[in-house]
Image 1 (cartoon, rainbow, N blue to C red):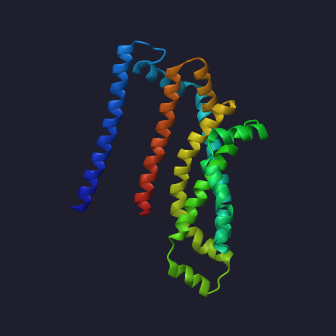
Image 2 (cartoon, rainbow, N blue to C red; image 1 turned 45 degrees about the horizontal axis):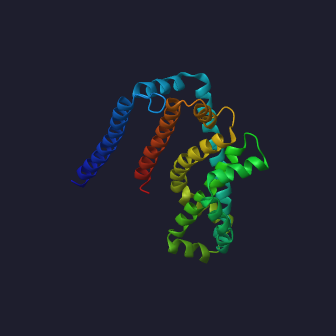
Image 3 (tube, rainbow, N blue to C red; image 1 turned 135 degrees about the vertical axis):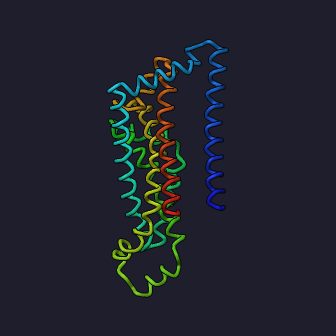
Length: 253
């Protein structure tokens, strides 16, 4: 009975989601038909054509591939730094409060500000990667620390009582405990990283990137291309959201 209710609830959610998508498409169709201005309100046919052109263009596929690689590199670096910080947090609780102002700073400062600063500091194609690292690190650290704070206090006290080596405890107990969060957080960070990366690429005009393609489309007032790229990004984010939900359900997290 309970399983049936869960399936019904899931079906309803998907139904509402598809209804929302259909409503947006319908509104755009009506507006584009009434306005008859392909420059500002391209038709659905034009947008679909732009999506097909992008996905069939070797250079555009290259941009997507390079961006995925950049994001993965940024996320891996972010997780390595975050795990090191968490290690010190386990050993010295106050270490987190020491770096917390810095985390809040990078979490709240606009992506534009970080991108411009990094561009002035180092320039080059590394700007989007560094920007993504600086934006995602605070999110990952706060998530890891939050997960550790929810850890069973009895287990933590037992580890203190047996006086186990912190390095051993970290790799044998704490890190395995954090694995479910790390898996889920990877895809959550990917969603955030994708948006940050594209924004930074657009501002720094990074060659061979989605951000640069959007900049070129904006320069040419190609609204259909801008919308096409936006839809592709939304699909990527949507796929990540589905994976996150599946992981949460499977890991019972």
